[in-house]
Image 1 (tube, rainbow, N blue to C red):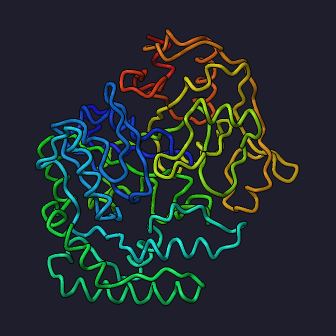
Image 2: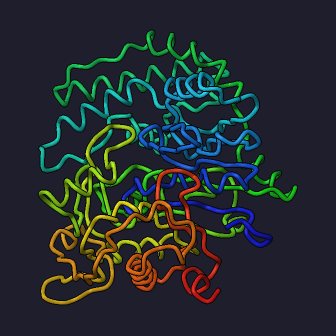
Length: 441
């Protein structure tokens, strides 16, 4: 993806998250000088395999496994200080050299204990039908404090008197809200401040101007990868609201989330699974049930890297990805986990929806309409053989190539990468023109 004309690339999820962005960022990071995360928090989980080793990253960008890459957490990320320090300690314990390799935006907001307590109380107070499916990591309340202009940022830790004032106000407001909701948890200001002292020096030592670093890197001719968390259909504005996360997950949030303008971004790679999953509540038009769902879930290892919750699987939904292509301005696609479909005798690809008696090929902006749609499927035979060993387009079974052709045609974006396994080497790379270029070669 990187080239003379593409030096700043955004990688986004183009479904409901868990598409395998971590692996793609890891694959692309080999060519990058800087990898920066632009939104989300420790509710994300990116699983990366390097050789025989597996790493599950929550806050640290996936590029950390390459010793020459500088990794940044942008101002759009909400950072759990203790989760970050724990993640850094775990990486160092496994031999990853972090010296001078991680930067943290001074403007990034901190997730504090009262945010987590409030998150859990809010979710517990909701009726079962109205639960959002939050991870309870305090992400939503932290973003709310950010927008309300009452949050604590990394740079505030330089003045602990001011930090205490912010923490006191936040703790008192959270405790009052939890009491109103009938929750029993309470947060103590002194305990929060004592715990902050244990991570303060580490966070301040990492503090930087992420936008300035990226602009300087590009000016020197460097290559920059901007990494998102979650997926486009969980975007606060463009996702299946209210069953969404609390940040801008789409490519439009990348510049704002690290501190650069949109004109520096040269390309947007959308990552999708060869099927569909989502975790938590909310509509999933192509959702499978029963044994078929259980088979796909187990074959794909569809359990959350952060929570361990089972994901809800379904067939590939072209309406979803067409919509994601539009709101992200996708210039290329990466299709992951093709190998998970190896044992299916028949495959289904949703090409449109039937809504109230009419066929639509667009994605509804109303959750109430989305709950009523019925997928219109194109069926085709599966390939019933292993694809994990394939390294070129020509090596894929004919039925797999036909499935990918149909997927690319329906979405209207060229496929550049095809994942046939979890390891770095288990990735087929195509030319800029996607499948057409591969077949013309």
